[in-house]
Length: 112
Length: 114
Image (cartoon, rainbow over all chains, first blue to last red; front, side):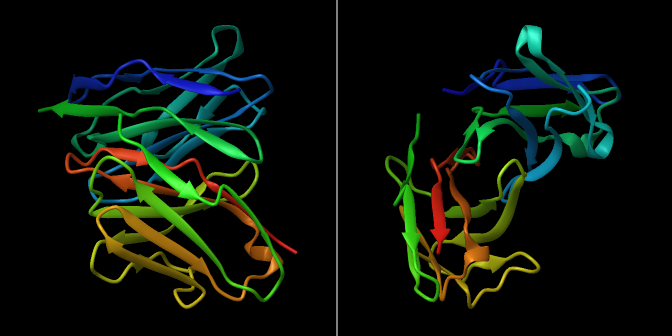
């Protein structure tokens, strides 16, 4: 069985400072891992995905995530936060063709 | 936490038939629901945004006459795949948006068209 834990329900950072959104997963097999962003009243938008290629994955808008099998983690980072990054972020794991497991989401707040 | 259910969880149908998938918010009212599809090992693709009591807003490239969405109440949205073809085989997921803009995802429906 697969599961995803987003360790922080809310993260607040100042504009221009680094962002770290944490995600830990459990999976019986080699999973695919995704980060999505959702702005209010909008659908999910894919930020990046890991599918057993390079462990450091670069995504859109300056985000990246590193797959660490030993730590079962897939944390999302960005060197410098922008006001437009304020949104809800979801970590998602998929280990087979038959299902996705979503984290509960992390609300990112950007302070001016 | 809030729960969203989908029914059926799996469905197999013949080519040319129509299939209805239900998405229900069980313990909250969802003024907005989103419908996604996912191909194996691929990311989710937003199909449409469904608002209670109004027409759904479809993403570019999604045929509204093929994927009929109805959001007749604050707890139920349905997606009907009309005249299904094998290329419609996919995993369909809905999510319900609560009043605080939080998202709750359904468990998904696996559609196989023979």
